[in-house]
Length: 333
Image (cartoon, rainbow, N blue to C red; front, side):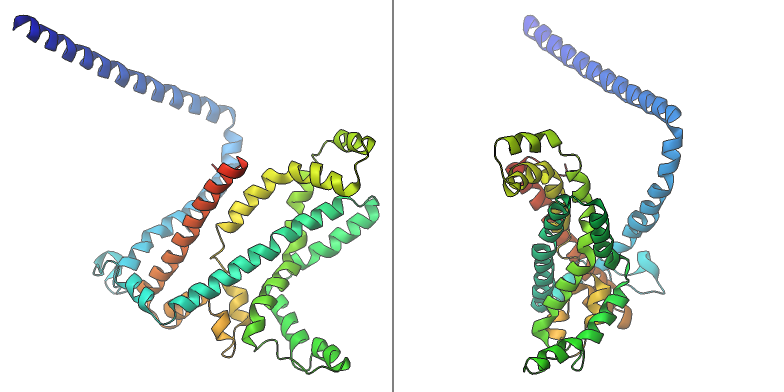
């Protein structure tokens, strides 16, 4: 019995010493990390100072407002404040899921988001590959200036141009009538809304979005192209086997980011293009949140709908990132 108790005591003593040792190691590690950070701060304090406005921006406008998300789970009463309002749990989420507009909003938001991703994502890549093959520097700069210009137009101006060109007596309908066709009311026809939204977005953003791909193509080693030309590879083959693999990590990262915001269909453009006649295809979650929260003052309900939309985007970002990590070994984390 004595030997057994001594053995048990020895084991417990060993465990205690092991725990103390691991605790000391963790404390040493924390101290070393803190010391290294202080050294880095003293050495690069100017860079940290430059980073301060960015950190403050995200804290003030992106993280501090998260405190107000709790109204999605409450019946918010302005006179009582956020903390004083009664807790109702998932009441507003259930109301949204059971509402008449739920499936229409999901279908329209996903439809526009996926359509935009499918069309507007590959166009800048193709454009960058084409621009990269232009040998005349003067002509290349001219083309770049022309395709970059729409990016600097405001959403209001772009929608105004659409309304001007596509109205029943506008330029497009005049050309249609010139060839013997009947005028089409593009703005009020529900079937045309998604196409007008997506292709006008492509026209406005394709030049600016191609910049990052052009920058990635500039890093391609010219020796690879020279070797491929010696081996008899055509220009198309060099694009497929040299240029595209070189920018593939950039393509994957940007695709993940775009896929993670597929439900974040912009409010401004949809709202400006929206009218009572095309509501069946133009009504999306962002416009529904605006109507519910701002016009009808249903703050808790609109916060719940917005939070649901953000959660769907977050889940899609995680899923696409994991798929990309397995397939291409390139991911955000």
